[in-house]
Image 1 (tube, protein in one colour):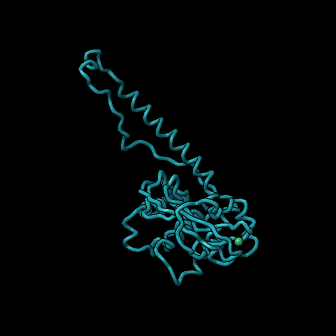
Image 2 (spheres, rainbow, N blue to C red):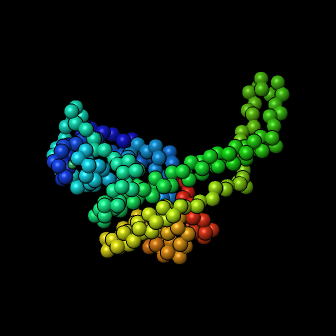
Image 3 (cartoon, rainbow, N blue to C red):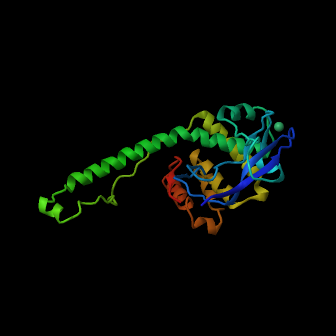
Length: 251
Ligand SMILES: [Zn+2]
């Protein structure tokens, strides 16, 4: 469960304005959807890179703010706004610092994948529904009046293990590819302070560009602990099949 007690007051470095953010006591990372590109949807925790845009127009990262103390009420104080997708494009033309550019390009990557996510959901829903209808047609409810009176249960749908699982084709645009290429260069320049999660991110970026060897090289750098969890196994499987699409999974 995510629990919040009051708000943290934060001062931004650009113009000194004071904002607030919820003071989380405990965090819940449950999400209704997880995607291999790192996006979580409908999570109780914000899914983000920490990129914000101050009301003065400057972009900044949450960890660059100065913590001033806790307050109980949010009265007269505002949250630091998250930049909109169209602002990211504009911002990136101004050659921001590496940490800010990584955050902005990561958010843009997720944003570019949104239309594909929707076609994936629609496609999966339609295919699952067809599997269910085929199962129901093969297993009609043949209970008699007497069976129902005695409370005999109707046949319960169980997804057949051989039910088809297909996804729509993933065809990134030149704009998407260009952003992914630049994000890879930036992340690889940060190699000295490399964390396993960045190796996973690079593996995914290369896979989505159909650059299989680079994807495998980065996947091999993921720590043994992280290899035990999703999405590592799924990414490895998709890589073997030379499938570039972002995939949805259960954590
Ligand atoms: Zn400012």
